[in-house]
Image 1 (cartoon, rainbow, N blue to C red):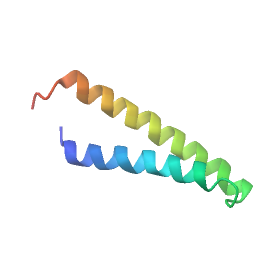
Image 2 (cartoon, one colour):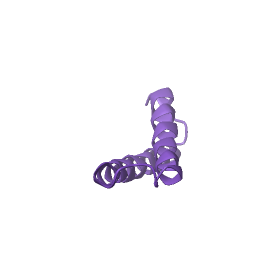
Image 3 (tube, helix red, strand yellow):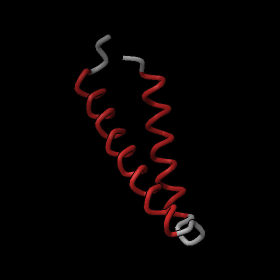
Image 4 (tube, rainbow, N blue to C red):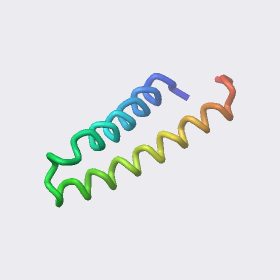
Length: 60
């Protein structure tokens, strides 16, 4: 498993979630709904990658 691409995805997905939380007043309502849904899916997949990486335990 290539860990560098997984780490970049995890950082970007959590950053997107944080930006959406911080800028929630200035994002239009129609765009906010789809961006929030996308962020939730990305964060769930990032958690899956974290758990999967921990289960592998560093074996390559």
